Amino acid sequence: MEPSPTLVQVYEIQTPREALSMAGAGVDRIGSVLVSQREWKVPELRETLDEARALGLGTSLIPLFSDLSAVCRVLDFYRPEVVHFCEVLSGPRAAKAGDLVRLQEEVGRRFPGIARMRTIPFAPPGLGHRVPSLALAGLFAPVSELFLTDTVPVTVPGVRTFQDPVTGFVGITGRTCDWALARRLVRQSPIPVILAGGISPENALDAVLTTRPAGVDSCTLTNILDNRGRPVRFAKDPARVAAMVAAVRRADRLLGRARLHPLPEG
Image 1: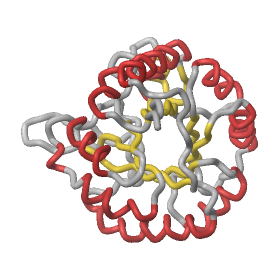
Image 2 (image 1 turned 120 degrees about the vertical axis):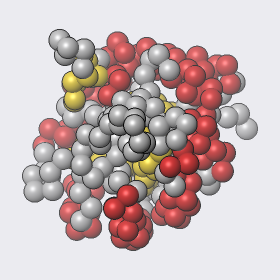
Image 3 (image 1 turned 135 degrees about the vertical axis):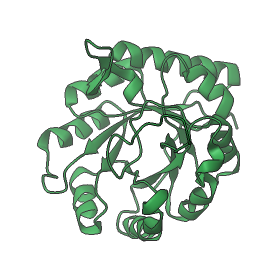
Image 4 (image 1 turned 90 degrees about the horizontal axis):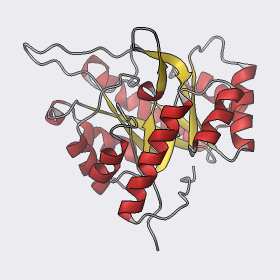
């Protein structure tokens, strides 16, 4: 059996027009974000997922809250192919990991057709030992169908660090994670691993060749830039997305990967 090519996933796609643009750029799956537990019914977001499905794209949805009833309402309304959980699991919030395992277990029981993706936090390059990434993966593997690596800040004396842009959640830092440790997870994980954290057109080729993930995910570094050269949230640059997809496909050719990538069943 030939190996599957690298799945390309792009966040944060919030409108039908953006979904159409991403299909044209060659992505496989779009990711959307639901930012409010109170205002969880967003007609345009539902239209976005419907448009993506009509275009043959996969759909992933992050609810930025962890209340079981609220999450279930969201999944029943939007019906994404993947529900993505990305709470911070290290530091003071590590004690909540058990509650999040139980949340995913219950979501799996109630929505067996929706795949569960869990972000596993990784330190920046060279600091992999500072975050228990592999141990956390072992904890969440029984209640997940997919893993996604992403970068979290690590405090090092005398070194300036960065902050999580969304308090309590991992992601959209634009910083690469420790690829050496990510490759270890890819090799030993019983479920597919998507590599995220600072993926761009400039490094996507090396990222795939180095870590051999099932997929790559990009958000910040495929956004348009403001007049100061800073990425604009919720605003994709289709040309950069297409360039990243081209880099991933080049890596696939070098690795001899096949054309179609299956979506894990929930």
